[in-house]
Amino acid sequence: MLKFKLLNTENQARRGQLQTAHGVVNTPAFMPVGTVGTVKAMTTESVANTGAEILLGNTYHLMLRPGAERVADFGGLHKFMNWHKPILTDSGGFQVMSLSGLRKITEDGVKFQSHLSGESFFLSPERSMEIQHLLDADITMAFDECIKYPSPRKKVEESMRRSMRWAKRSKDAFKDREGYGLFGIVQGGMFQDLRMESIQKLTEIGFDGYAIGGLAVGEGQETMFEVLDYTAPALPQNAPRYLMGVGRPSDIVGAVARGVDMFDCVMPSRSGRTGQAFTSHGVLNIRNAKYIDDHQPLDEQCSCPLCKNYTRGYLHHLFRSGEILGAMLLTHHNIHFYENLMKQIRTAIEKGKFTSFYENFQQKYADDRKM
Image (tube, rainbow, N blue to C red; front, side):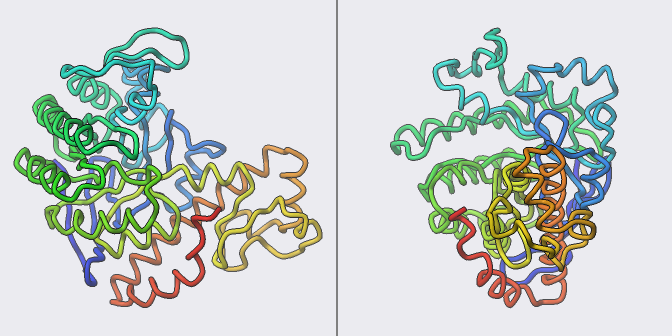
């Protein structure tokens, strides 16, 4: 059982706190992605220093290596990776479905071949719950089916209803404990009536939180916001809402304005490895030749180690030289930027100034999806 409390609201935007077995998560919150028990190019101590209060791990990847039972033998994922704050684990459904020809779906679950070894595995709602329990995830995600976008309505409808049956099996298999919780996942593609049917079924089952799945799959920001406009308000007010796999800064701020509380995305860490920097002035590519003689910090408004101690010219040199340090410094900066953005959002909601914050932010980041 998780405890969630709404502290402030401004229109649809919400400021809350989620109490878990491993600590409090202030919402709106961004979860850095630690798929296999690590945020790429960062230590867990560095991740904590960015202000992150919760990380995301992944059932599929951790079941393949090192194995859920082995992680449990180390005392769970928190001890294994030296992260003592909350962890949410993805159920593995998205990764399994992306295997395409390497998997077979039945009502029981999904049989698939490992992308690493070719070995056969079977993942069901019950096994997903067992793995996430072995990992000791504070927040477990229900096992669902993820399909490609766009897909015909008939396929979306069949998939959504199968996911709802799997949601019930996930709930039945979940081991409820104080400080631990299970989130259901809303599906239904871009079809409003199917989304509403999914919400009805999930709320009848009853979950500690509700995720919005099947977005950020290529549909475009405008369409995503349209789906959020009718989906988020239909979810229970007294439970956290999690938009899966989102996203870019403008996606996050826009989704907060529509009532979303939690986010995850590989964007800040992946961009940190490719030279794309998120700053208070917008997005820049540090590989650009114009930075070779730039003596400025990356972002004068940022207090991360990169911005306090190094210049744009030095960071440009690291990336052009292929040095690992460049990816480490910029990944730290990008996640720091995301966590500071969430802090600014929370403060704006608390002060009743989120609407003006949103309008000002849009002017700087309106084109961040063109990266």
